[in-house]
Image 1 (cartoon, rainbow, N blue to C red):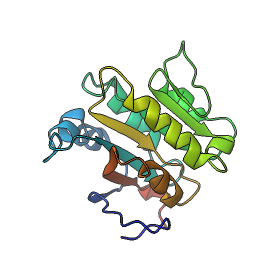
Image 2: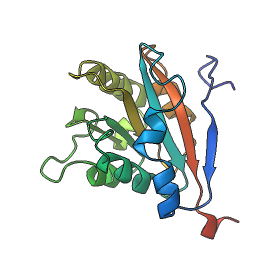
Image 3: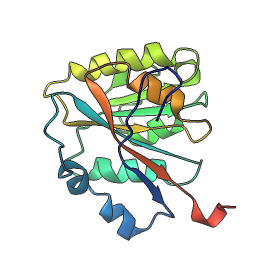
Image 4: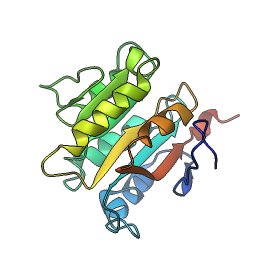
Length: 178
């Protein structure tokens, strides 16, 4: 696939989810991600991105993954075109609300201007902060906004050669699929 920033992009397998059930959430467990082939062969971090229409279950999947011990300390990047960053707040610890445009307690809230005009700069800063975490995370979780195409975020996420898109999961709300 070609992305708009003129670099080649090899997306990991695309997975379409018809609707979120307990069985599907169990299928997408931390063990599935961490035991995937080639997970440990790379010297850089794989990004596991979730995209889909609003209300299709992106934040639900990430909240479930963050409850798993294996993924609890994985950093999360939340791309949200709104001015409020509600999804980042839902994924952050209750006692530590996220700060727009930077990584705070392993949650990066990219909303407002950080999701639009400053997207590339903000993502570069967040990826730099993630690379300095100790211990270095095995993977990075990411939620793409459901209100726009994911290409600008994919371009921003792949600008740092220490990171690559490992999985790109697309959720679909089957009840409202037309």
